[in-house]
Image (cartoon, rainbow, N blue to C red; front, side, top):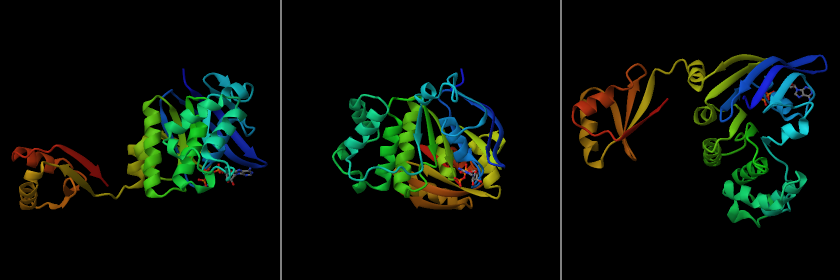
Length: 289
Ligand SMILES: Nc1ncnc2c1ncn2[C@@H]1O[C@H](COP(=O)(O)OP(=O)(O)OP(=O)(O)O)[C@@H](O)[C@H]1O
């Protein structure tokens, strides 16, 4: 059974139609990105699924109708907004216990969720002293209260720096591996690349495409003619591998773990083949645009 079913979802604010007849299903364990320009309707769609906005059409979470069985349906959903307003003087522990009580859950569960997002060494710190990344992890811990199978996230790393973003994405990857289902809006392709298996393209309130991260990349970066191929080789082989590649006309340089080679988009595997034919041991490789 689908975890989330959206049928002909239409949302109007007064005379303005913001979402038009959106239909899709999301299976348990899927990770789906909502992609689209500002004002496309991503946040509105998430708020309809949460049942906090009236709408036309039907939304079901695990068979529960969001409108008619809202309370039960919402127990299956955790929500991470772009930025959460916390009580600044409460500690991390008090905040989580407060939200657990609000949801009628055992406050003891709060600690478990804080451990899950690696905040166990911040328990007695007032929320106002947390970094942006720690605050967002606290928001994630609150969304995990009650252990809901579906997580909705609205541009979850929009306000974070590069490092906190990577940490947050890693936590979401762990949750995915544990079987959670994710539906998140984003403007960052790296989030799509690292987290999503599927992308819903929204434009002017319409579902323009139900596609893949790879297809989105080709649409976003049609002009990429070269990639960087990072090759991991035993240290003892790096210099001679570099020479071999240079001899064959490649632009190549050393990096921390091996070599980096500039390759044409239609010959990405050529340096790998060349090195392996020449007897080098390529341990691993990564490809970057
Ligand atoms: N409460 C509201 N009343 C009237 N119009 C609204 C309301 N909330 C959203 N809208 C309008 O609905 C449209 C979609 O907004 P929404 O926030 O869902 O877009 P979005 O795709 O999330 O955009 P962004 O990427 O900028 O967050 C916008 O034109 C917005 O102005």
